[in-house]
Amino acid sequence: MHIRCKDGKIYLDQSVYLQKVMEHFNLQNAKPAPTPLPEGYQPSPVTENASATLCSKYQQVIGSLLYIMLGM
Image (cartoon, rainbow, N blue to C red; front, side):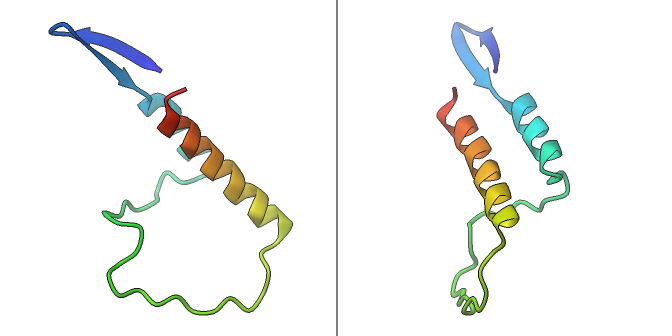
C-alpha cells in the first residue's frame, strides 16, 4: 500500500498491488467497463460445468480483488 500526505490529508493507493495482480493473472489487456453488464443483457443458459481449474482461477482473481477493495 502506498501512503502519502498532501495538504494535511492522507492518501492511500494500491495501484502497484493491483498491477501485480493484473500481471499475475495475465489481465493487462482487459478492457474496462463502466458497468458489469450492458443494459438489457440476457444470459444464455450454461450447458456444461466449469472445470476445477477454471473455478480455482476465478476464485483467486476475485479473492485478490476483494483484498484490494478491503484495503488490507
